[in-house]
Amino acid sequence: QTVVTQEPSLTVSPGGTVTLTCASSTGAVTSGYYPNWFQQKPGQAPRALIYSITNKHSWTPARFSGSLLGGKAALTLSGVQPEDEAEYYCLLYYGGAWVFGGGTKLTVL
Amino acid sequence: QVQLQQSGPGLAKPSQTLSLTCAISGDSVSSNSVAWNWIRQSPSRGLEWLGRTYYRSKWYNDYAVSVKSRIIINSDTSKNQFSLQLNSVTPEDTAVYYCVREKAAAGKTWFDPWGQGTLVTVSS
Image (cartoon, rainbow over all chains, first blue to last red; front, side, top):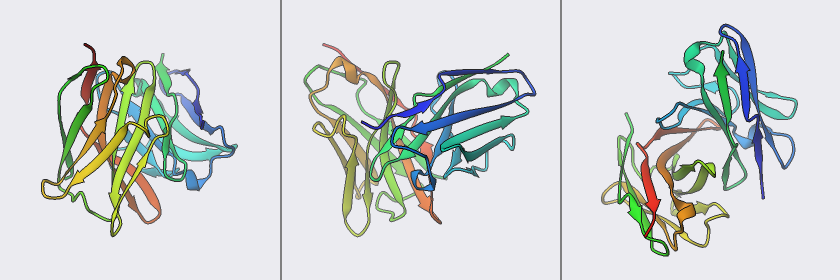
């Protein structure tokens, strides 16, 4: 059973920088996993942020960026805003199936 | 602008079938650069990809191992929609269900838009 692992929770100060990661139980995450990142706020559907490692949607704020870091997919928020407090999920592709990570609860404090 | 509108009952009885439909506007269910997915979310299981249907000269389906024996995702080209059928449901299938478009272009893949979500409760 494939498992995608994210930090359960992280805390960051307003204006700070934080990196969320997404690891695969099968080994290093590469471009072939087409990493996607989503933001979800309470009572809302997930919203797409980043796709295929680094690509942003037209609505994705510039302070969000995606990368591969140490064999994991990573989402970095630079200059964090209070409205960035949310749950963040990654999604990886396993050749015919997609698997979500368990999510990271980001607190801005 | 692509929009997805979900419909279907919010209650299903244990051992029976959960059925939801997702109507598509602004795109075609038989487009050869998209796949149409069902994803659910519950407090106990988080976000869970269930499966997808897509057309590449013929129809294909992929399903999550966890539900593979119980799930059917179909498309209806005449109504430009796709549907989810989950059989033999239990209370563990209680979740918010989303339909989502998966778009591929230039070697990249993204998931947008999402349907509004349907809370389905499995209870007698």
